[in-house]
Length: 473
Ligand SMILES: *Cc1c(COP(=O)(O)O)cnc(C)c1O
Image 1: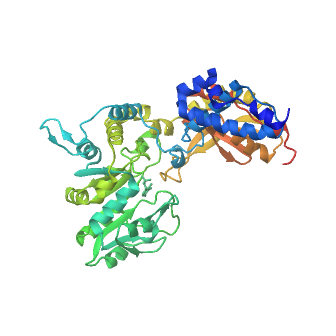
Image 2: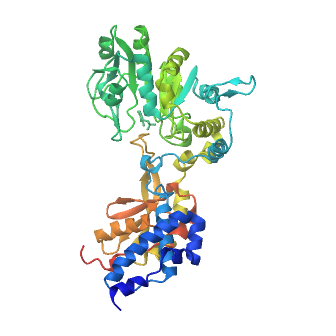
């Protein structure tokens, strides 16, 4: 048969759409999407048939269209197992929310809610009213508001209190948090003039004192979240700095970054400054994140003296940075959990995971070992190892939390196998993300709760290690 005769035997779009697999696809994705997919596949087939390939059946074409649509439809923001050992991993979405927060956000999504509506008076209410009292109760602050994230909080606070004026900050605190947030850049964009004082490792009270003048709008203290200067260092503490600031009538703003609402030492973790401490030390305004140690959705809290919060709320920029009803609902539910600190480690995933004992994680590792070993099919040696988890997101950068993991090591120490394995784990229905450490892929089990789901998922592992040979490496 010549090529043009063969081409005439290729099924038409209509014929393919009448098949059972096409009907199933239409049920899922709608008629026009399926028709378009079928058309694209048929066009490919025409090219291949010209080159001598066989003509597929109508059902085969329809099934190919269904797979194509399935692949496109799959969300790129897939849920995954975070076994990196970093509990608050910015690239993996930071805090996982408490059930109470998820339920509250779901209700807010599904229903109309009294977001800016005072149910008692039947008059217009304020978005901030839902959280204000709760935040003040938990932090000892006079007033509070909330915006999109902590970077926005810093931007808004500086713009509101010191636009066109000077903001004094120590050279030791001009930090960068991830590529996109550099303190000097945020300050510039907030319309203030940055006045650096001291040196990288030492800043004295007299440095601040000497810099304060008639044009000073704010003294800014920044918690150097993600690094620490050690050795010959000097920093002016918040209490002393607040005395210097207030003596000259300049407000002190303390950006805590992560901050926390509870003293973490009660859970056996290292001390991270609490918001209540920062307020008690005399800061006029304190800013902190919602999705770091606090364990809620992304948000930036601004708490402190009423007069400053009122000024901040009047800034038109506030409107551009406000949070929506879903997040307000989730934040309120998360904050309420802090009224009962004893049960926080049960209810709040971030603290539940950070406080998991090595004994508990170790027992889990031994339960999982045979399953993982079996799925790896003798290409890798699997062992239970001690490792160190990180809190992440700049909180307590130097304090590792002792943990337990499974170390997956290529039997012949062949390096390429390791990246093949990492890729195969990322291809699982629920991708598994570990970290490479000294020639092994380590799965830190600190954040693993759904053990059965993990095992069922892991048995689907398709190593596809280049046909089992990797002679090239
Ligand atoms: C993380 C952090 C920020 C930014 O907070 P986001 O909530 O990520 O916007 C700002 N300042 C400090 C000190 C931080 O640690």
